[in-house]
Length: 561
Image (cartoon, rainbow, N blue to C red; front, side, top):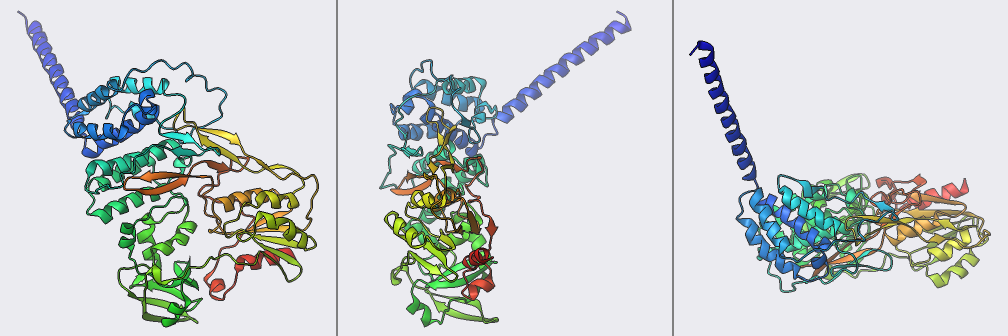
């Protein structure tokens, strides 16, 4: 045999060994990749599949299975699986046990629907790190042949926002029960995933929220920490309509608080009123005092520390809602530092329980009045529908009317707009969830406002707004803005428009979210942003400390000029 032939045999053997080695390495890498699933990874996939089947699978959506119990049964099975293939096989067997799925003849034709798809996300189904091709195809088949018609777990109110149905409350829920803690997380996460119109706007991607919250729900330090985890989850939707409070969340922040009302401006708290004036006088707390620190911590530091537990669509509303957290504590006294008449003081002041206060409504009893220079003023928080004709009659000869909407109106928008508008106007569009294709929302034109073909009131109209302008107040503002001669003055509103949907949390607790999306007719967003403002006036420490209503003063100046 020649040298060339020998060399060829050696090269062939070398190539075979190299190919075999590469195959072994590739398989080893594949096996290693399948063994990298963490506890959180497995629970993420379970949360998503459980929620998807709940709202998509025909048998599950009709209520043919106890879906909470199904979750409790599947959790131990996924706990001990080692890789993607094992995990996918568990899910496949689970899906097969739920019953047959017939071909859907009505799922294809959606050509007549104007979809809003920014919230829709089923891309996770194709994630090969979690799911085999067989499982992905099975899930896509369910999507294509999803349940149509009346649902067991969800319906729509007349306005279009989702109504959550048939969810067990588990009133006697013991917080140590890991399965019920995960149910609490998975149930809420999936409701927001499929039915919250503003999910696409959250500061933290909703998938990332799930990943971050699983360890918080798996390993709470105690019952207080568990309730704080729920609160942090709910705050993550960045919606001023969201709330969650229990005796455990209150215990975390402290049951003792100062007897003051305040406004956060430039990282400081300005006293604007009292929860109980008698108790405030005990420590000589005065309106216009500017508090800079509490318990040797700067006010802004305290706000940032509690921000993840403070609901609000934007910082303006979060600062308003900080009255529930920022001055609270577990002791009945605290040291504060404050500015009065340009001098800095510090002293220890007493704190009290809320039971010690007599809370009064912030709304003025006066429904309307006439200011200097023949300018009308209407307090929208006090005005009733039946008052509108007489009030507008009494103000018909004024140069201008200021409608103060820094409060919560009483459904007077449609009555008032008939006086300040000469024609019908579109003032909003909505998106509402498509229950037959969960995660998708449908555009719909809203109701018009204004009925008359003549202008009943010809003077200037000014609307006053700020962070207290929320929900129906923002909706009312949008309607009144369509008037013939209207100017909006103030600061960023709460940014939470749309009818509220409520949710039952395990343990008998409740929360809520904005259930339909409200937009201007040109589809400009209002959620988190607030209503459109023509003249922006941000409050200043100097103005508030001198007792000025800077927004009202600017409105009067605008009218006079």
